[in-house]
Image (cartoon, rainbow, N blue to C red; front, side, top):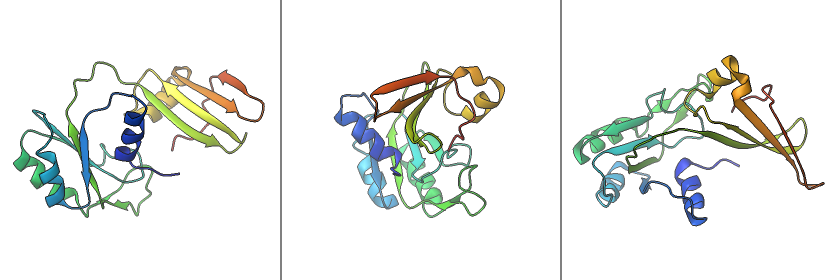
Length: 167
């Protein structure tokens, strides 16, 4: 299942997780109008594509004013982002998300996926953050913890496994 960041944050919010206030839109004008409702000194604009590495590909911008937001949104909408997960063809940006800026004290990484080799749900986590999780896996694999859940037997296997691809 592929969901966008703004959709994931709405699900988390529904279950009581504190997430920054944000709005998404399918057009620049709609985004700018909705962004005016945010109570923030800086705006974080994020391209919504189904791929990691958006920030490194220019798909995440921190902006000071609504005017800067409008200009950056015009540049991003319709642009093809090429990341390590999209392949050379990239993915076209068809929706944008803007949220209030946050003061980040500590970054963590958490991913939930189906491990096809074992047919189990795998939670991959690290206290080293997510921006360079591939580098963490390569250089300090012991910093990544994989927890597999066997739903058939109600058993949980916890261990360090670094041979899973990070997608």
